[in-house]
Length: 115
Ligand code: 5GP
Image (cartoon, rainbow, N blue to C red; front, side, top):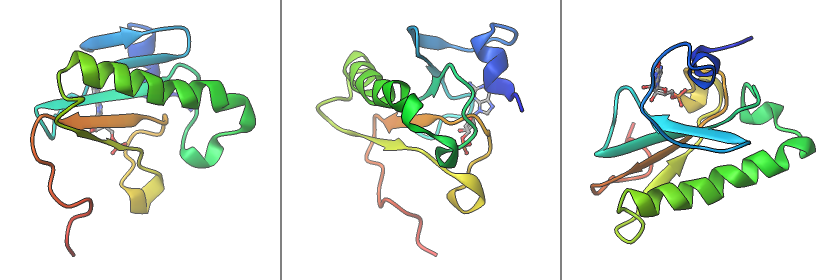
């Protein structure tokens, strides 16, 4: 089932796109949680990490190489950043088109919220 991210890929809705190539697209999160908050998505619709198969390894690897490029371009490579991929309900996934968050530009604090 298509999500809002497919509409961003198709330019049917606007987004602040920072990077695009044959396999992935990256754009600024609409509700940033840090000074830099960018999402990188595979152009192919993959709902969750549970749906990744060996045929997706090039795109999955590209998420990381593009994350490093974007971190450098955004000036946060040296100070540091966090990459997050949420999966399903307990992971807090809201959009069911696999995506990697890049967060940085401030101290992000503990990896998980205290409960
Ligand atoms: P998830 O919780 O699924 O890992 O993260 C989904 C992210 O997508 C959220 O951080 C949310 O702010 C972002 N998001 C949801 N809808 C849109 C949209 O239409 N445009 C953009 N740029 N980001 C969106």
